[in-house]
Length: 229
Ligand SMILES: [Zn+2]
Image 1 (tube, rainbow, N blue to C red):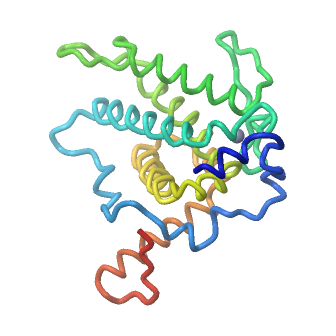
Image 2: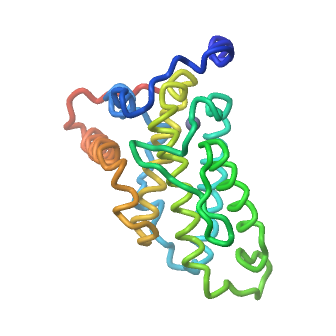
């Protein structure tokens, strides 16, 4: 970690814009790495005894915490200089203020807007009720979708602009695991427009095919069953 810290001083990593770089996150040595063998499909399915909104609320809150944590590990490399716009795989995101005004902002500013507005929502008792007998607002589903969209933008930015730092910290297994879990969850409950997530379709294709390969591996049929950690 020490050399990474040193690197952040002076020139911002000598980094080229993500678009010119080879997509490091698609390299097999990284896509194979996970931190769990859990059956994700089972993990995202709504358990019979649990209310749908409760399930969405608790999972989305957990995703928010994990994505926030994942971003915090590389946030020192995500500055107004290294990431002048909120970009991910050639897509630009703009923040809109409460009055719908489009704001030009850097990636760290955008992510800060995301994190603070999501934090406000998940701790708002009127939106995410935790006390017995309180009901979810009628706007709950659309708010959940909005949160998922923002969280996806953050994940996409980490992959496309900071994957190198993630691998240096050996956190790519965590990131891949989080991404697979998150994507399966939003698909299960149709929380994100597939157009929104299409910028990382190449990655999800590889990750999900790796997942299937792992499953085959479990029955002892797969060759090259690589387990890195
Ligand atoms: Zn950045």
